Image (cartoon, rainbow, N blue to C red; front, side, top):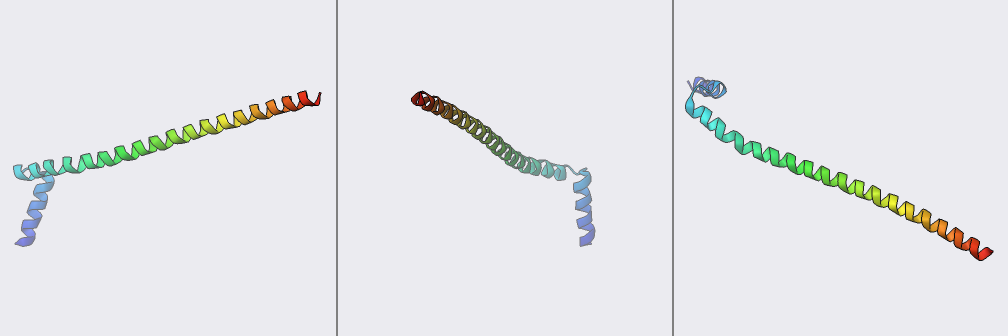
Length: 84
């Protein structure tokens, strides 16, 4: 008896011909969905931020390297001028 009842509600929930059953399903799903979406959005935002930081860091490194090159060139020129 109990098993049959259980099976009946299960099949009812799966096919969803019973109005109340489907209503419960509809109410449960949106609750879980936005949470999942929020989580995904957070992850995506985090990834985007990381990529941005990496890009900025890369630019900074390039600028630093460029500045160092310029500095060395200037120093060489100064030393040459002094040597003259």
